[in-house]
Image (cartoon, rainbow, N blue to C red; front, side):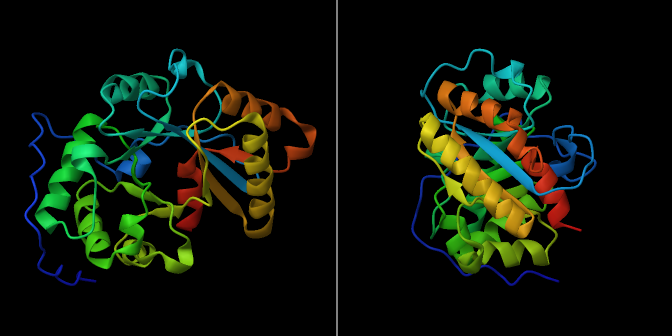
Length: 254
């Protein structure tokens, strides 16, 4: 169906800079083209952990050595975003980009500026399989959600939001126009403790067993990573499948 015209907007804003080299347009939707290799097919509830790499928070050496089936989200204003994204992609990991700083997506932006900011963010993380709405603005504002969906239809990125589905305006707009969407059930602190991470994993496993899948976002760090490794190896958790977010997106479209 045709998208309704976006309402005329608004305040004057500083335009996003035009990227010198725009992100490529893949032959298949970006959420598939840049997805991580899924784990072996098996039955069972799905838990997806998305590690958020906060600018300036903690060391990143060895990110490419992580072999767990997880996803990552990078902030577009992170000075290291292009190099970290390249390292993770070489390792076969999948990425979301969160438009931040000069690329932040806010209510009231003209549609052309929304598209320009998304282009600028994707130019910094060119193989992003999805866009992350970590503020909740996109999920709650119809005009902004419509503009985002229009922009993402160009390459077929998915959307990860932190807005509960019952209040998520973007979820329906995205579904109506072939854009994959998933909501995170929780977003942890930038540096969650082992206890916080274990609690989030247990909650996610419970939700997954209840409804089939659960997703949460956690700041990346040694404590979070060690908690995930221990949890994934525990016998009690083997009935729940740890998967990249793209697997949840694929299941949601069936």
